[in-house]
Length: 198
Image (cartoon, rainbow, N blue to C red):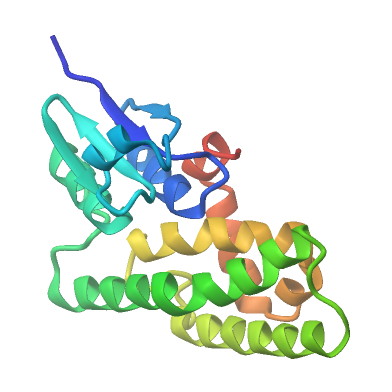
């Protein structure tokens, strides 16, 4: 009997969605289960009480990049963390930058704050300019390829859910960046993006 791949998180989480997109890209069936954040038992899946985590049988993996690496290992398709050195390094550089720098500003300081109506006046203007700057950096990183490596990688799957929130809450910022918007449209057309919309 095949063991079920369980991904723990919430569909609204950009990082959980990336993990689910990776499973779909690989053609792997999975079950999305809610992360019981704050529950002592959940620490067995993710010691820092974050998401996503993955469980398959007795094996547990936590954090998005590691989850994608595990899915790469389980799949019979091209890995989303590329094997070719130049592509692998590029995918990892941008994955790290997206997680460490882009997500906190783009999703945390901008999108979530907009949803909670926390941004006003000069503070809102200042953060909007920081977001514009980050979107310009991302556009340069994609170059003319539309992906961060020579083909689809984990970095692109990290980017797509973040841009989905930008499109939802301030589409004009995305429209200002033509090449980035085009790359996002290509990501939106993928089955993995459509099937993981929360």
